Each structure stands twice: as structure tokens, then as C-alpha cells.
Image (cartoon, one colour):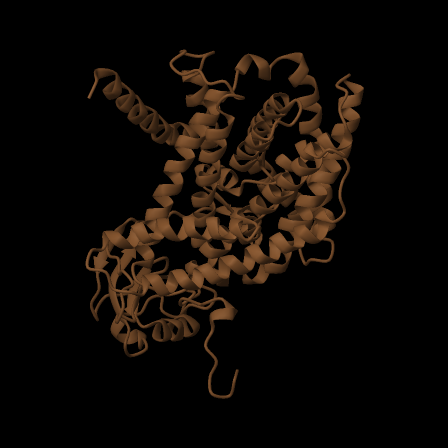
Length: 516
């Protein structure tokens, strides 16, 4: 091996380390970690330290391929952590936001972008403006929740699951809309083909079906016994790649298929399910560090602050934050049970993140006219959205009375992995102030037979449990039992807690003898 190769390998490790350590700075200074990753890439680019220099047009294809694979694992990880019970009350509203909301955001922003471009002297067509708007039509709630947690705040009611569901499922819709608009812009006629509409529905429907089927197949594959535990994680990578590739082969939406596959597997029971979630969370972080650092290298900071980008970029960002996003939210949630204050916060919580920048590489690859300018515009708007909305989101949530303290629980020293033949769960139940268990001993609590309290979390400490242990308000009871017994305990002593009992999606529920 040459010394140069060793230097490159060490430099790659340094970039990963810088990306990871930037998480500390992001929390300290209230800045989403996305910007820290991009900043690392820009710092080592041609206009920074000059260690790396990539031409966006020359390296568009490999970066686009990297971004596609990265988005697959990021979406799968997000779906894997989505619990059906938590999103069940907001499924209809979340799906409407992720579909109609994306379309409305793109249309309103595209219409205003066309006017702005003509006003600022940049002569371009309406469909080109619609393509630009499609690129930035999806949101990134992960950036928002990172800001809230960094300030010790979470959202009240069903706002949190609503935004989690929307952010996870609207990226595939934005990607699909982007691909359709690229085909329209690059076509010889340059006109919108209305036959694209049924094709759009086909891609959405078949993508969802492919995701559910692959999720079911993934459950079956993970239910098999392998001699080496590490093979289950290799199998997890294979499921993601097969799901996306298979969906694309049948001309459906591969991104949607991957996300739905993750949601499906996240609500089924199979071997090493907990380990798979943690493994994919790590893979998703790795993909984000590599992807955002690479995208940062592509950007020339001096082009972002040029008048050609700065003036229309500020105007488009204003339209996106104050017109397009709020308009889409209020129309999409018109018949929902959400109040005006909640809709207002959802409108402002539409931070832009990873997906728009990745999608902005697609026009570069397909040779869309002025695609480099489009990439810079998207990059500028994402940074503006994250900075402005990110800084003001927490004060707005408090002002609207929709913020509540974020309670970070101590990590449990015990874990129970799902394996074939073991039908037990390990779950922590929190004792609220109004709980009938507060002030009694475990022996006096008369818990359901078949459950075992192993540890009691009190503050940041864990105490061994015995019959004489007295339960106090705010304690966390770490309980082992079958899903049925834990559900019985949940309904009797902890109504409204977050135990889902491996509640599977309706399509996978087994019918009883009466067909119910």
C-alpha cells in the first residue's frame, strides 16, 4: 500500500470523526447537525482548505448515486422506528400532508418563483420553476426535533407523531414529483403530459404495495435461524437494497417502497429486531455524514452569496416559509381536528433538510438547463430555512403554548433481544403522579401474574427490585413479560403509556375463528 492511500484513508476517518463531533457543537449552539456536516464539506472544498475540489457537473452522477443509496437507508431507518400505535391517530392527516401538502407547496412556490425569476431578469419557463419548487417541497422533521431536544423541549399532543409521519413519508413524494418534472422539462415538446397523472398514482400505489410485501418477506427472512448473529445485519442491508431495486424494476417509487418496508418491519416481531433498529440507525448516521460532507464539497460558498443567487434566494425563501408551506398546511388540514395554533406551528416546523439537496443533483445528472444554478438556489434555501426557522421554532412553540419539557430517561442497563421461541418483552412503565401505584410496595401492588419487575429507575439511577421496594412518583418500572401480560398491566395501571405490545399493521393481523 502506498503512503498516499494511507493518507486518503486517514483523511476519510478524520471527516467522519469531524462529522460526529459536530453533533456536540450543533446541540451547544442550537444549529441543526445538517449544517455542521455541510460546513465540514465546504471547509475542505476548493474555496476552503482546498483539500478536495469537485466539479458539480463532472461528479454529479456518482454523488447522485451515493445520495440515492443514502436516502434509502435513511428512509428505511426512519420507517423502522415508526410505531403504528403512535401514528394511528394522525395517519389520515399525515398522509394528506405528505401527498397533497407536497403538491400544494410545489405549486404555490413554483408559481411565485416564476414571477420572481421574471422580476429579477432571469428568463426561464414555468415548468423549470415548478421543477425547482418540487426539489424543495419536502420537510425534515429530524432537524426540528434535534433543535427542540437541544433546548429540553418537545411538542404537546399529537403534533410530534404528525410531523414524524409527514417528514418520513413526504420525501418519496417529493422525489417522485421531481422525476416527473425532470421528464417534462427535458422532453422534446416541453409540455406537461397529462398521462403522467395516472402514472403518478401507479408509482405511489405500487411503491406502497412493494414496501408492504418486502416488509412481510423481511419478517420471514429474519425469522430464520442463522448460526452467526452478524448475518442478520447483513440481511438487513440486503432487504433495503432488494426493496428499492425491486420497486424500481416495476417502475414504482423505490423511496416510498423502502420507507413503507421500514414501517412494516418496525411493527412486526422477528429475530434481532432491536439490534436491527440500532444497526440501521448507525448506518443512517454514517450515510448522512458521508452524504452531507460530499454535498458540501460540491458547493462554492462565493456563488451562494452572489447577487444572482442571493436576491431571488431570499425572495423564494420568504415565499416558501410564509406563503407556500402555510398555505399547503392550512388547506391540507382544513377538515382536521387540529387548532389554528397547531396548524401555525406545523407550518413553521417545515424545515428543509437532506432530501432537497440530494434531489437537486438529479437535474445535474439529466442535463436540465441551468441545473447548476438550480443546485445553488436549493442549497441557499435549505440553509436559510434551517437557520431562520430553526432559531425561531422554539420561541414560537412556547409562545403558542404547544411546548412541554423534554424528559430524557436514563438508558436501561438491561435489554432483551427478540429471538425465535422467546415471547417476552422488556418495557419501562413510568409511574405518574396520579398513578394508584405511587406510594405502595411491589408486594402490595398486585401486579398481573406472569410479569416481573427487574429494576426501578429513580432519577438517573437504577435500583434492584424486591417485594419490599416502595414505588414513588416519577419512578420507571422495568418489567419483563409476554406482550399480552404487559398489555394487561398497561391497561390496568398505566393508561395512555407508550407500550405498543408489538401492535402490528392491520394487514398483518391474524383473524380469529369468527373472521374478526
